[in-house]
Length: 250
Image (cartoon, rainbow, N blue to C red):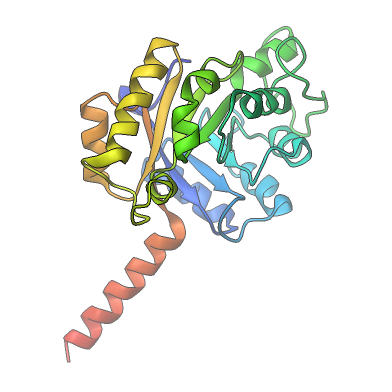
């Protein structure tokens, strides 16, 4: 899968934990290449998630949704509402990856039902093949078991990308649940996953709350794209900074 981001730069996506169309619009206007509407964590339910997806243009290649599991019903609704990628958490086996492909791809590759709720969602003929090209099937690896079974996950036919959840991965190694690791087993896992994905033509992404850390991973060509920050955390930090400045000024 080839990236087509603004200015030729690797894509950066904002995680959205708040059910707001405005956040989606502001993120894209600010220069983010896309968003991850997060139905796994945060306050976004299925109805709100489907509505939020409509705040992005139909041809936005990086309008993703992260689901809470492999249930095909919500995945179908999100795709029909315009999600261009589905991230499924805690994928630990090739069988789970196959189930994800089944839910996200039309027959010929998967078992997705045909019934889009947005017009002209996938331009091209035939429609189902255009849809399969347009939708990214993304397995999130965030446990030791996922790393150990990476080869069978990554080689699943129809899988497009791997997304690393570094904080949960750290916890699975018995480490503190933080995201940006410069060394240790989490860093080793990033390097390993980078090698395996490149060997099989699958892209690799990672979440980070630090622009500097994310830029370093991209510069080293360890990953192809990043999820950069969460709207709720940005709001929290801005509020904290504002009140600290106010109190400190007295």
